[in-house]
Image (cartoon, rainbow, N blue to C red; front, side):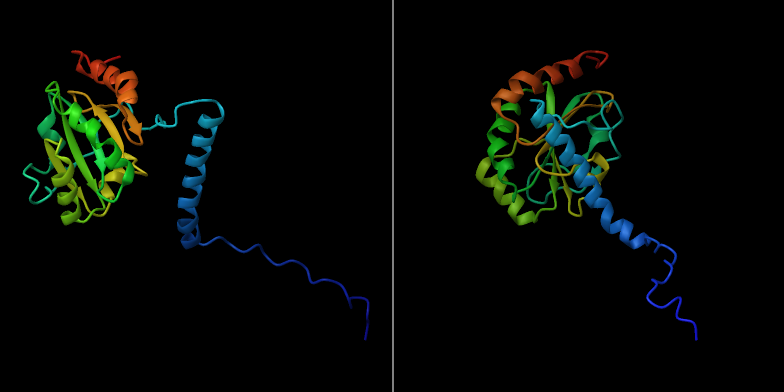
Amino acid sequence: MSTETEGKAEPDGPAPRVSGKLLLVLLPLFVFAALAGIFLKQLLTGGDVSTVPSALIGQAVPVTKLPPLEGAGVPGLDLEAFKGKVALVNVWASWCGPCREEHPVLLGLSSDDRFAIVGMNYKDKPENARRFLGDLGNPYKAIGVDETGRTAIDWGVYGVPETYVVDRAGTIRYRHVGPLTPESVKSVLLPEIEKALRPDGAG
């Protein structure tokens, strides 16, 4: 018997295929890595991490019709009802610490009747959301309950709080990631609202 092939490695077989299930598992990691890269780039270059790019800027708002938060005293969120006026869409949750930090800022903005502040309550328990508003006050003209987070995905939300400026035509003009502060409102948000309030909604 020939021993020439003894000790030689077997030839490599075909490369294993990546299953569809594995891709679904890895996809969120790729998305997270991309977003982390954007944040890192803005931090290293001195950019503002609150202004993460959004593919929806300049686009019509996604179809948004959410049931109300029972007991909050305001209707559910149907953005069609706000066509013709500027809306500030705020994504929030009672379990979100930064949401609590920004809430006094929203209350201050709610006294400006040139625009309407509406809320998207994200993956929250109704009783906790009601308690949050009972303790801190309600700045919202409407609140939609996004129990599963499906609508937030349509908006491109990946964390709370986030705030969007929507013009009279229902076009998203600006996105703010993270809690609003008096400084960010004065320097960025109010100028963006002023642009949206112009007859053509343009900057």
